[in-house]
Image 1: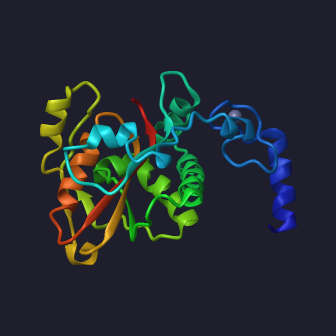
Image 2: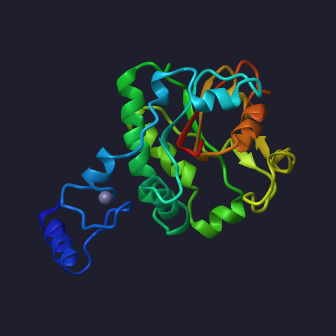
Image 3: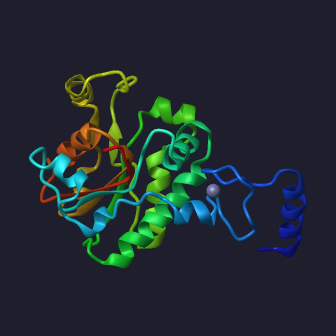
Length: 232
Ligand SMILES: [Zn+2]
């Protein structure tokens, strides 16, 4: 880094220290977005080591997939909930990139996951993306892609209609609501590929299911699932 810029950042940091997105304490100079202590204590699922993990079990029988898993557990009040909040509602896209890099390192290290050809973030409806300024799943995908050395494709799988707020709807309604909400553009470019679908949080899996069913209509496509967090 330019020494002058670094000096300037240190100077600014005296007044506005950068804070850990999880615990809120001041970050050290060598720490990025999330402090070392919070990274060390992340409630990891180790799903990547178990093909029959909870996410896979939740998706079994709904659509065929190669591998599925999530990185960390989302619990009410835990640091993961705080990180997701920062990522989705507090204009901190860098949280997604940082967490995606951490997840990517784990997936790469184990070597148990066969490498996909492309990484596809679950799309947001354009109006919501415009409001938020970014797609949080795309941020996670970018971090994963950087470490795994796989390209991100974010303009082929698209959301067609605003499905509104999901949280208060029952699972069946939610699924009905999501039907026809995803379309694939330029499908030839995805044919014969293994695609890694990336989402922020998996709860019922209905969004992932709707995306996958759309992608699986394409010729000889295989799908894998990686979510940052799992609520189960
Ligand atoms: Zn922290």
